[in-house]
Amino acid sequence: MSIHIKLSRSSQAFIGLMLLYVALTFILPVSNTATATYHLSDMQYRYLLLIVKLPLIAAWSITFYSYRRLRAYAAQIKDTAEGEDFGQISRGVAWLAWGFAVPAVISSFLGVIANSHPSFQTLSSLFSSYFYLVVTLAAFSYIAAGIHKLSERSNIHLESKHIRYLILMLVAIGVLFCSLIAGRLHGHRLGDAYNSFYVPNILVWTTIVIPYLYAWFMGLFGALELILVARRTTGVIYRQALRYLAVGLVIIIISMSGLQYFRAIIPRNGHVTINGALLMVYGIYAATAIGSVLLAIGVKRLKRIEDI
Amino acid sequence: MQQSNITLYTQVVRVTHVYLGPAADRFIARQVQNHLHKEPDELSESDLLRLIDWVRIAVSLITEDRAIVEEYIERLKRLTVVGSSPDLAKEPNHAS
Image 1 (cartoon, rainbow over the protein chains, first blue to last red):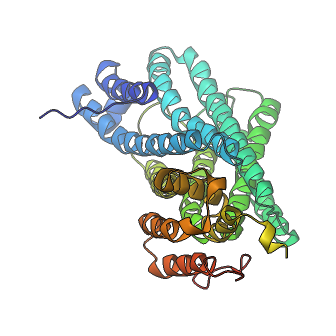
Image 2: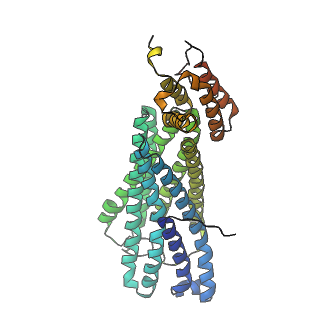
Image 3: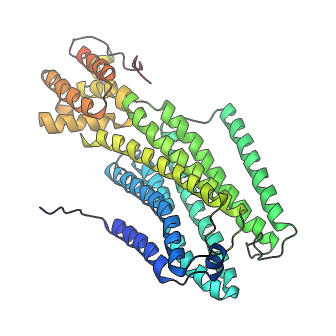
């Protein structure tokens, strides 16, 4: 008996990308600094690298799966009033699903080149900083726009108390982020481990900090609106399904914002470091995976309403 | 009476809207087309009990909350009584 699983082209491409990411672990040359630090042979270091990568691959795959479910639902209801809104949200989640896997693969190549040619470190670091920024901006803009239209369609608007909470949260996040970035920039040379933006301070503030804050604020604004929609929209059964989707998406928005926040404030050294920072990244990706599972459950329930 | 000008299909959709929100119209349209083999605007009072049976089956597959299903079906059944008001705007007692 044979089992035929029909995969879409994008699913095939994603699986290919993940396999390439694993293969690169055994193909690309390893960092001499890392092998010396951990007293490992090249092959032992490659296995260590694979173990470090596997949880990330699992989290990305779960996010990609939930994106595919959401896209299928959005396609199913595309001719309805809220079809376009879910379409925009699914485009945003697509950016998140692809946007963390693709740069990881490219960064693997760039990192290896940078290890043997230190002058290449600038390009490698700039790529990471700006690629993730573009992904976050695009993803959160689409998601927030879709959610906002959905809330307007449901005639649900933020009240003044919600806006006050939101402003307080955004100010706290903004001030903390700016102070952490200022700490990294102050007293460190351009391009050292603590100041790895590789651009003058004025460009760090204008092309990294401000766009990131804008993207996170958009994401959090969308998250708050989605919570209200999921609580207040009509249809008790519909609302139950939408709540799963909302909670999942809110967790994804917060965890992805947290990941970018964390990436921006921790120093980089160009190779794997087993420390608290890695555990923190794992924790954030675990939260993203949980959010993606909840999103997929919500979409499954919403889709069931349309299927029956 | 304004109620008498509203088609039966619209009344069913209005009751369903309380439970399925924006998906109500297309949900009922599908049940009518797939199980009664009619266009939604052709729905008549003689079809209503059969439609309610199909809706009960369909909604039971969507939610495991029996109380909500029974409450929804009870509201639909009220439409079979001539001149009754289906309490369209009221949220269900089991709304969570």
